[in-house]
Image (cartoon, rainbow over all chains, first blue to last red; front, side, top):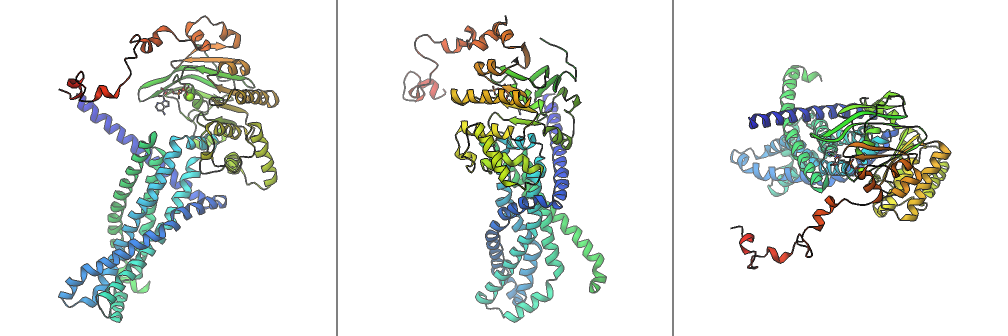
Length: 271
Length: 290
Ligand SMILES: Nc1ncnc2c1ncn2[C@@H]1O[C@H](COP(=O)(O)OP(=O)(O)OP(=O)(O)O)[C@@H](O)[C@H]1O
Ligand SMILES: [Mg+2]
């Protein structure tokens, strides 16, 4: 009896949390959209972009470069065995541009930015600063969440392009300098196989990744429990949540993009 | 003690409000009408629900049951957007200050104004901030961050922020706690002055009976989530209820002293580190858990 009761209580709690989260999401999205057309909020967005984006560039670039480099090392033997080593660039660049660049950049951001957002908002929450914003007749979602969300939405695709670029460059350098692959052939094959479509759809994922990461991190900050431990736990939950969400979005995005691609395949030459 | 209140009885009316946190009742069917232009002081033991009550008055917390009215208009179930409009009539001084720690003192005070409109005349703004800070004795600290101020200083800046926009209603949550006696008295004078000069309605939570008597038009005592006594200073001073008398005179009943008195001459409830060492032959059995 007690067990059934407990399961019931847990389910209720879960449904309630989900409801609260969806409401938070919709309010966050609506506020962000409104903020986009409110020039007075631009300095806030600008400050967040600086904190979120600019300072993430080095770490994102390092991530990208190492991914490209390690792919070159790992894939070389397989391709060389078949005498296809000149096509190494195809493999590296497709992998970087379509999957590894976007996903690893987003995960890196979830750790670096998401954690900081949750900790900041969580601390504001437990010290009643969020209530203070509210008590002054200012919507905390508009003032605190919207600028952060917009900064993440705008910057994640750009940072992904940085990661892509560094991945491609890293792969190229290792292939040509260390593995002694003919540079012209490498570039030629790569250029033939990687399409603009791949790069664009890869970077566009960033909008969804950035949005999911921002809203989860902000939500965890807003609902975080008292004390240093509460804030720490909220950060962990925010990271894990963002991580899982990014991977899930990535999967469904791939399905959608694939079907879009096959639908438009016949008329592609016109585009 | 329970009186019925009507929604037009005061500027803020809390009607039959019950608040529960995960099943625990913190406010129990409380009704209170705050009269406009008067200073209402709320007293009561620590943890009896004063801050929670105060937050209901500005709907930072929503009641589990019951209603809250502002100027006859029901506000407890309003949408955040409409509440924002109502809240502009309020100033709220938080118990812990709640200053924005990423903003300077100056930016903290101008925050509500800046959110409302674009500031064009910065000289006038500087003047205003200076004046408000001078009121609480904090002029000159404009460009400090809250983290580099002492607790009492933060409290005073929070007070300056609450009164910055000349709100109609100011809710002070323990404005003098943590301040030295002289400074506390200045804050009392400030509250009185605001009420006399600007006809501000104040609700003040305090533990300091001296300041309560000084500023109150009416004192409301809470006890375990209910209103125990409600009246002017003289009424409270002469209230027959022993709980009220103990509170206002700062005396404790024997039953509350029991845990401290227990143990006779030696303070046996004290922990001694050596009691927990396994080498202590007397306590060894307990310490190893056998
Ligand atoms: N957000 C909350 N969640 C759960 N319980 C809460 C919450 N806020 C307050 N409480 C509980 O409500 C009770 C009353 O709290 P409140 O802060 O109103 O006390 P208080 O009268 O202001 O005390 P003090 O004089 O120490 O400030 C406390 O027992 C507290 O545990
Ligand atoms: Mg309190």
